[in-house]
Length: 483
Image 1 (cartoon, rainbow, N blue to C red):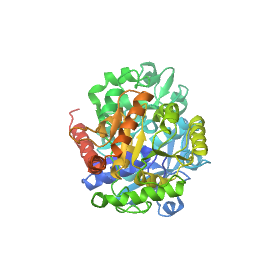
Image 2 (cartoon, helix red, strand yellow; image 1 turned 60 degrees about the vertical axis):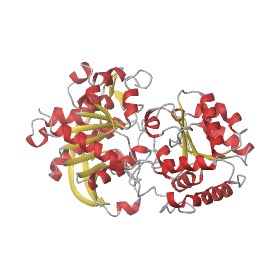
Image 3 (cartoon, rainbow, N blue to C red; image 1 turned 90 degrees about the vertical axis):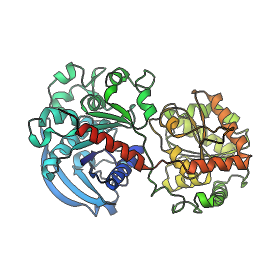
Image 4 (cartoon, rainbow, N blue to C red; image 1 turned 45 degrees about the vertical axis):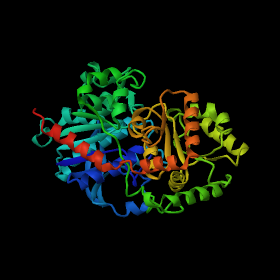
C-alpha cells in the first residue's frame, strides 16, 4: 500500500496547531504498520535551519497556476524512517513573521493552488504513484477535483484514490469566484452546479468533501455533530448528503514524544509505577510560578489557544467564583485580547492563586501537564482535542465539556464503580462547568479514589497505533472498491 500524505504543516518543520502534530505522528505510525507512506508539504522559510541543512534536492520543474508558470523545487529528507518531500517556491512560502503565521495572506488561494498542482506533478517526477493521496484541511481540498479534471486521462493517475481529513470545519478556505479562471483554471461548471460554491465564494474544503472518496473527521462524535446546523458551519446539508462516505477516527498522541518517564522538559520523571513522584513536579511548578507551595491545594492547568471555541466565555464568566474555591490555576497560551487581558488581571490581583503566561512555550506546556492535578478544557466545540489526552498521559485529570473528541476520550468519573478517567459536563453552561470543577476538587481530598482515577487516566490508550489501524482499514476499503 502506497500513501502520499499531503499537508500544509508538519512538526518539526512547520506547525501552528494540531494538524502539525497529526501530520508527523500518523505517518510515523502508518510506517510501523507496513505502509509505504511519504509526506509532502511546503518548504516554508521558517523551517529550522538544522532541518534545512539536511534537505537534498530531487528536481526542479515548473508548475502551472492559471496562466502562470511558476518555479518549483522538490527536496527530500528522511526522519524517523519516514520520507518527507518539500515543495519549494520562495515567492509563495517565504513570508515574514513567526512560524505561527503560515497562512492568512491575501494570496492564500494562489499559494495553495500552486501547492496542490505541485503535489500532483511531483508524483510523476518521483515516479511515485500512490494508491491513496491522504489530504488534510482546506489547503489540500482542491487536489481531488484537480486530479479528476486534469489527470483522469492518465493511466498512472486514474486509479489513485483520495482520503480527506477534516481537522476543523471552521476553517474552510473560501475565496472569490474570480479564482476559477485566474488561478484554478477549471471549468466554471463546478461552481455553477454547487460542487465548490459556498455563499457566493469558492470553498476549498467543500471541494475536498465533494470529490474525495472518503471523508474523515478526527473523532466519531464530531462526524455526527457537523451534520447538524449548530456545528456544521454552513456545510451540514452537504455533509448529511455525503454521510455514506463520512467516518470519525480519533487522533492519538505521540507516545515517544509525550512520555512522563523520559520527558526531558519536566522537572522529575515518573510513570504509573512511580506516580508518587508526580507531586514533585507540582511543587516545583508552584514555586516557579509564585503560587502558594502546598501539595494539598489542587492545581488546575490550562494550555490552549485563548479563543472562544475553547470555552473561555464560560471561564471568564466564572473566574470570580473559581478563585473563591480552594484551588490554583495556571494558564499558558495566546489568543483573543479579551481573554489575555482577563487572565492578566487575575494574575496581577491574585498572584498566589492564578498564574498566566500569555505566550507559547512547548517545554512549559509539558511542565503544566506534569505538574497540574486537573486540566480544564470546556470547549464550545472540539473536533478532537489533544490537551485532554496529553493530560491523561501525565496523570492529570481532564475537566471537559461533552463535545466532539472530548466526549469520545474522557469517561466521566462514576463514584459508585470508580470507573472513568476524568470529569465532564454536558451543556455549554458556566454553572455546569463550575459544578464539575467543584466535584473534581471535592474528590481530590479523597486520595484513594483520586489515585484510582489517575491510574485509569494513565492506562487510557491514546496511542496512534489504534488510529493508524483504523486508517489502514479505510485505505483498504476504498482501494478495493469497484469502479
